[in-house]
Length: 336
Length: 108
Image (tube, rainbow over all chains, first blue to last red; front, side):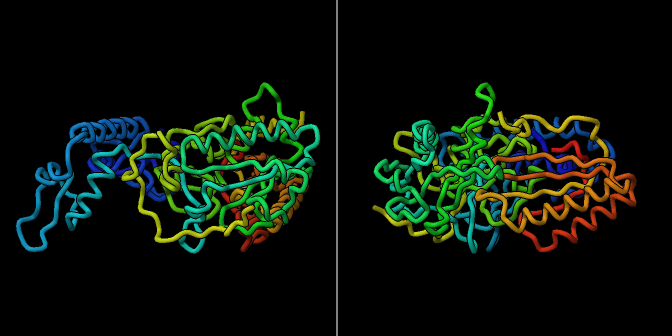
């Protein structure tokens, strides 16, 4: 799906080969929004229909390449690649793409030839480092649910459990409700990693935090308005919480990526996958492709597994993940 | 029911004209205080423009779960558009998670 209109005006002829190799989305993302690019020849006009056809053809070519090498080794692939026959000679792939050494050729093989490029998730960064839970913390993310929810307390507990399960089912993270702390579930309670509390300000439906934040800021706040949703509508508390819990794992709004063409927030993030307009972290109102049910896509599942590892029994190819920065920042949570 | 139909449909009416839109956004923790204050300054600007005829109408759309808002003014003409955009940019200069765009008010 091509959603970013400025990116639809591309250099058809010369990009087709690159698209076949690297994936259509990657090439679209490489064209800055607002740039008008002419066609390479006068024979093909850069119309929407022609572009759709070119991307579809290129995508088919890319799938063909991946199918050809599925189950085969890097060594077999290497033998098939032309290498310039002189000292310092480079590997040449896809006609004119030069790769300087064997290690990078292997990385290219794993990421673009062997694996289907994943899609859709970005992680918050602070000073260039991922804002994520450390390995010792990620399976001890404890929380309380304030009894100030009153008659809705049981429902919030239930919806939190459902929303946390959605993330736990795919990634090696563990959220644990600590009922003993519900009666004293405040921002200063250091016996849990975060608190879930009601507010009645009308400013938002809910809001969350990132793992690098200190304990007093680590709250999931649910506004009174979240309990007035149309029960027959797509937007429900559990979907809101799935999205907000994505933030608590370090995930940013997918729509801040330039491919969405709107709702840009900042550049303090690192892509885990390619852009996904259907991500649980993408608002439909920001040129999203999904709806307000807000469920995890396959690409969300792969993206969060890149950060924390896959849940037991979930098939996952870690070689499809981009390289992580050397260290990560977290809020050093207090634990019971 | 609350007024949350905002999340389920785009604003109605003939709104395909080019407009001046501002966005107050959230990273995940809600719209910051300074960003909300900038939105209120621009809201006042747009309402003043509507009162004196430089803007034909002002459309507000809540676009997210965390209080994100898009405010869009349909200007009377190109000169008014340029003026509104410049005023909005000045009112929000240096404010994070706030940006101004020239785009049809029918989006997003």
